[in-house]
Image (cartoon, rainbow, N blue to C red; front, side, top):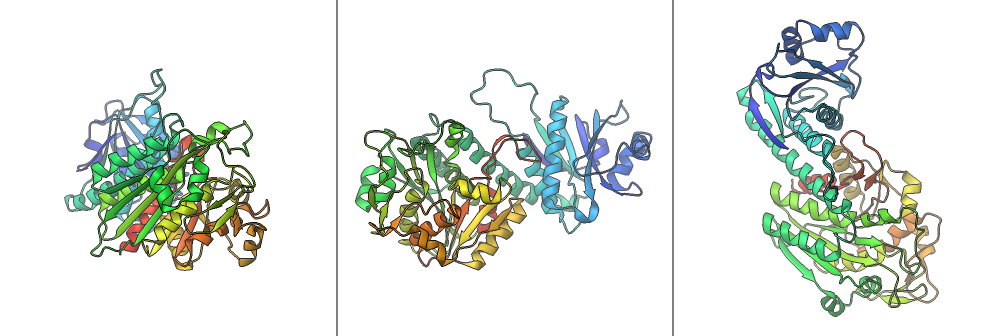
Length: 499
């Protein structure tokens, strides 16, 4: 979809449909909807008086202009109660409206910057929200489908404002929204790919393409280099697969110094069978998405490189499969991590924390000021928080608060989980320094406590996206499949730290 911003009167634009909005409880029409209603000889007012248009959130009414406007259709989008409007609600309404218009065969749309000036939403934020909502809402993954799509694509979205002085503001909002949405859709593409296509090698190739496109520094360590570095925890997981592992390192350098300000670490298990501790077959196909954390940090650093904040960012993705074979890691085995800690393996299905252990220790050696790891780590987090919230665990309250705020701005909900020292008791091993599973009780927390052993004193937050990385239904700007969580949260965090 091509998106552009222009100065014009929305009622004078020739397009497939224009979008105007209406608030619940609105007593009289004003602005663009009033002008549109007048051109339609009061059709909108009549539908409001008849109770067909109420302005409830995500209520969409489509009217044919029948030649009274250059646009063929008018979509009236309900934004709910004016005082309750948020940037995220605007995203959702735009996404729902664009999808409905696509189903009606519309291939070009014009809209105002919905919500601008309401409930503290600036014109720039509104334009960003409209852009994100449109690009995220009409996303589809059809790479492996040969049948023609039921609906055509929306080829163009035009965001309109009548004041020429506002054009630079519109352009800023559009640019940021486009970068964030396209990065999120990149992560969605990677997670939606089947594991026979999105292998560790393909993740490295994707990193190479992004590095070349956006001027990032790239290093990809092979198995031999991992052995030289002593990454015994990561290499233990790789033993069951014929696919060679990759340890992917990306650098964005926007700061004045050589120090790493922020390190983003993403779990890159491109398929997780559970290894010898094999998972049930039901829904095992979804384990192609066990690299969602790696996809998120890779997409986030590509967006950061385009937005160019004055900060240095590092992204680390340890990538491998977790499969059973005659060489595979076994329950009862003991591994030695890069840090020198020994780990007793209770379950080979708790492999994500093993590869992250070496990745976190690698980052520590660079002296990063902040570390954030992202992983589809535990089913226990899904039990605790469902599929609504990402779980946040960490050792630095200020960083946790910043991440939650960045998530709120993105519309990606995050809930802080406890990290009391008492939970560490469950990870104690009789035969090694630590064991990789602390039992069923508090499983998401004990997994995070395991990671904390390798994060050390560096300000660190772990985001468990096991419940939020995928969705099985279409709602607002989420579509069935990968969500791209938490790409926009990570970018917002880095931008806030750069300030």
